Image (cartoon, rainbow, N blue to C red; front, side, top):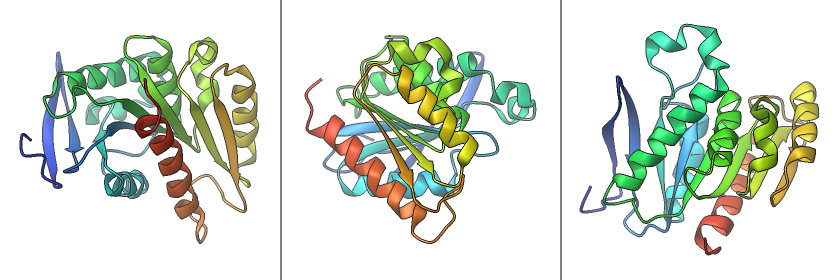
Amino acid sequence: MSDRTPYNRIHKITMDPLGLEGILRVPTKVSGIVLFAHGSGSSRHSPRNKLVAEALHKVGIATLLFDLLTEKEAQDRANIFDIPLLGERLLDATGWIKRHPDTATLPVGYFGASTGAAATLVAAASGAWEIAAIVSRGGRPDLAGQALTQVKAPTLLIVGEKDTQVLELNRLALGKLRCTKGLVVVPGATHLFEELGALEQVVHLARDWLVTHLVYTKI
C-alpha cells in the first residue's frame, strides 16, 4: 500500500502456524490506526464494526479488521472465551501492523466488542506495544480479570441501557481500571444497539474518543 490510496486492501496476516486474514485500510492522510477485535459470532465483515471503521477513515484513521480465530477454531465456543489466546492473536496483529511500511509509525488504538473487548485490554496490559486508546462496544471487560489494573491506555466503555447484565459487569470493570476511563450508557439500547439511532451514537462516541487520544495526544 505504498501509494496510501483510500481503498481497502486485503492482506494475509501470517501467524505461524496459522494465516488469519484481515482488511487493512489506510486513508490518504493518516494520523493513527485502530485494530478491531470482534466478539463471538462475528468476523472481520461485521457491519457494526465496518460502520465504525468508515467513520474513522473519514477523520484520517487507518483500520485493520481481522479474525482472531480461524473458521475451524471459531466452531469451538471454548476458543471464543479463551481471552489469553485472543489477546495473543491481537498482539501478533499489532506486531504485523508495526512492521508494515504504511502503518509502522502510527499510534495504535483498539476497538473491541463482546469478548474481543477483553482481548484488547489483556493485549494492552501486556505492555508489548504502546497502545494509545481503547474503546469497548457492548463488551465483556470483566473477562480481562487482573489485567484491568495494568491497562494504561485511555479506555471508553460503551453499553446499552437495556443490556442490564453486561452494564453491571462493565461498571465493575470500570472500578478496576486505573487509567483514564469512561463509561457511556446509550439510552434505550440493547446489546447489539439495533434501536433507531443507537449505533450512530456508538460511532460518534468511539470516533471522538479515538481521535482525541490517537491524533491529539502525544504518546
